[in-house]
Length: 286
Ligand SMILES: [Fe+2]
Ligand SMILES: [Fe+2]
Image (cartoon, protein in one colour):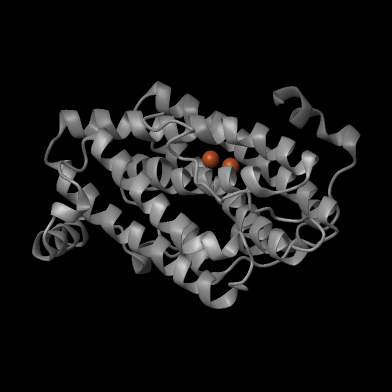
């Protein structure tokens, strides 16, 4: 990856998430991740539109991995003694409410940046949760997420090198996606107990994730100068260009019928996770 684990590690100052005392909060977080993993069905769309064999192989393997992660989050909810539940509307919107129109937008927005944000949230939980088995499960899952981010970074950098004209559009869309992360942060600040040692660090953590996204955009060659050096006018022009020329727009791509992301909580495999002997595939990949 273009950023090291160290560069993506936020200092929570030794604060811890307690699996008993913070059970509800942890379950809320796990349910957001669970939804995100079910959006792995979208790998099918990108596999069908893959521009080359490397990408096709990658997306088919990624789909397998994302569905193993579904099992991981179900297992963590079980360890917490909590049930699978709805994800927040903003999380649903950010992960499945819209779909990029091109491969280049997908690898930049959803893989390098989107999975990059998820990866940092997972690192944050690994670094703070006081529960060995939960940490072990997440530590295995992040190895795969790191590969997804790496693929997104490499293919974005290559696309921008080959077609520099793509840069402005990708940048405009990236500005909107970092805005979405800031909105999610504002929601969490309002909704979650601010006196909690980990949660009180959240505003700083979110600023840090946006800084990392900026570094990633710089290193991929999407951004030529830091955000601070972009004037308001230039930012607006990039966003306008992105939306004027891209079909990344929710109304056009709203899912036409019920998909697994709408029905997974009613799915028998979610309501009653499989017995260990049925999970051979999970062990094989681990
Ligand atoms: Fe995943
Ligand atoms: Fe992933």
